Amino acid sequence: MNNAIFSVENDIKKLEQKIIEAYSNSANIDSQKKLATNQHPILSAKELLSIGSTEHQNSVALDNERFFELRFKFSLPSKKRPHIINLQSQLDLTDSEISNMASSKVIKFINGRSTIVESERTLFYTGWIMIALLCIRFSTISALLLLSDISAMNAFFGLIISITLWGALTFVCYNYSIRPIKSLKRCGLKLGESLIYNGHYYVRE
Image (cartoon, rainbow, N blue to C red; front, side, top):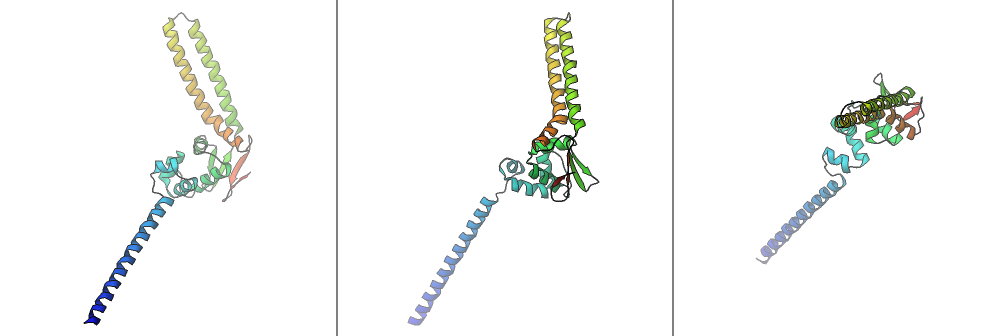
């Protein structure tokens, strides 16, 4: 009988040991999951853009077309996305600057295989010429409004509309023609120079 009692006690101890081991393993798994979540938290696209690391953003942008479009405001096929990510990293450009260059056609895709970034003289000087012409045009309109026989109230509203239109059109000209060239100049690319992607990084043509 004593042997039977001793056997039962051993079985109970073994069962208790298994329960302790199972609980310990479960705790370790939960701890590992929490650690993994802290290292790579699951974020929404907007949260990733706000607080995610650049490396994480780049990784997601390369794999996900919608996130790439949300980040840079234009879409590209998967084979072209590394061209943009490498350009941004190499020249230390912001997301906004990349978007601006793409909309201004400063970034050009040639034959679907290569990418060229060109600091165009024509685009830069055309922007300044357009801004100068806008200044002359709206200065003339403002002068005519002030010298006309219309009421002071109508002249005031006319000036407000004129200044608003002048500011909006000047902003468009600057943003499209001048800003992208200035961004490239900040990165060391002079007027008339261009970069071409060789499959790994950008080199001067």
